[in-house]
Image (cartoon, rainbow, N blue to C red):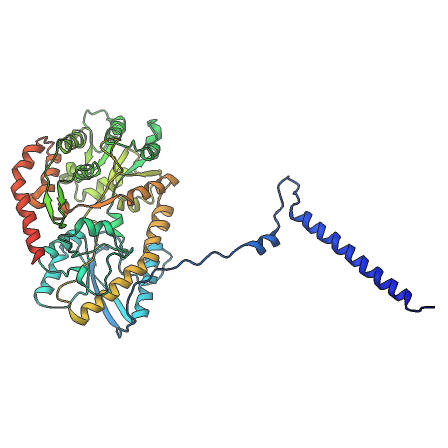
Length: 506
């Protein structure tokens, strides 16, 4: 008798039993992975998802091509617009500490990173926006390196460029203006003879704030039962005629005194610059460039004249459009006392203005939307949004800086712009403007259209022959004589352009 037989039988039986249990268990697990929950939906197998999920590839961060260098605690001096005295100008250069506010914290983190990387201290020097060229010119004339970088409004930089006070940035080592942290439209529009004396980059956000747009009061728009402007924009049918038609429907003499004034309801609120924004937005290009990147006066066409007259018919009529200029003498500060506050009263349909007003009206109770500057006609290709050279800031380097000092300025400037593309620009565009300040998803889509179609106007920057002031003056005087006015200043425009070219060629 074999005494091991029972043991072998038990062992084999145990193995068979375990195999059976294992098979049942696997079957149950498979069923659980596709089982339905009580509400009929498929229950998700978390274990399977975890096993099959691939890790997202890490974003490759483009970095500037700069040397590893220690500047030994150098104070990097940046003269910029006084945003404390002039609240329409945003803080761009310096932040003392993190506060939880997106723009402030992005600036703080950007500066901290660059200061630690290059052992520098970024020092902000505030100066009145429209006088910033004066201290820089004095410093250049006395060969005083009082400022490493000028981060002022483009109008002031244009004055400095024509005074031969700025370096041609295309010839400065360590600056690569073709990189994505610089605005390529600004470089293309404002260069002269392929020379760029000031750049617009991600270091600053005022160039974005200075972009022209149309804000509209959604409650008043709904009350008037007007067409939804968002589909009009998407379909390419947002035109001057459509905007003026809606604006006319909103005008109402609320107090019945027979006079349209600040006590009434208006379809259009704005300023005299709007006529130039409309002409730009309609495709008018009075100054163009030749094959050598040199500007020349191209003159006006019949279409330009028609655009001007259509804009004047509505904006120039004091009974149809409420312009800041019409009330300047009545108020100490017409913008702070009248124009900005009145948009929050639900008595203004359209506010034709810069995107800086979006921030100003962030606490407005009634929702408002954002639209691009309208086309002249639906057949026109694309929208065009003008950037104001008075509000938008760029950056330039004074010619008093040279040699090792110039190299240091270039390295820090390039590094700041590159880092801003990953910190300040997303904080402004994605976090503040598109998320915190806009009131609907459609406005965020409109902002994409606006920022994809921006131009910088050399006519406004240099005002050759007083071209822009002549056009805006015709508007405020409700004067239709566009052709005779432009003919009268043509020689001055041409000679003004020639002087600018001559200055930049030397």
